[in-house]
Length: 74
Image (cartoon, rainbow, N blue to C red; front, side):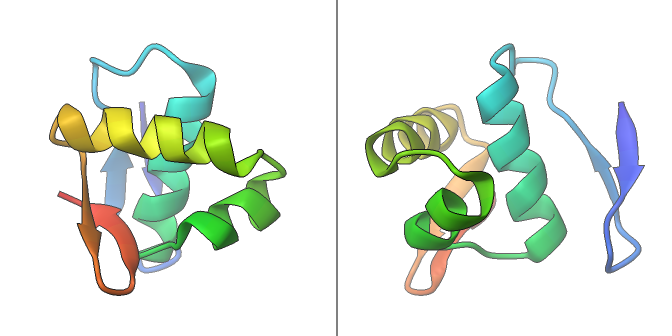
């Protein structure tokens, strides 16, 4: 499944993502470039503990990386 981000970049959801919430976080970060945990919580209406769990899983699987400004695609 590919979509077009606001920056004109084709974004595909990795095959290893089964969780709808993980896909949502992945696509949000892909579309925005970077995102903090707080911004993900606010914009996606998801509790911080859930966001931290999802981003941890995405980082462990090599899909996201943490930077000084938040999370971005790896």
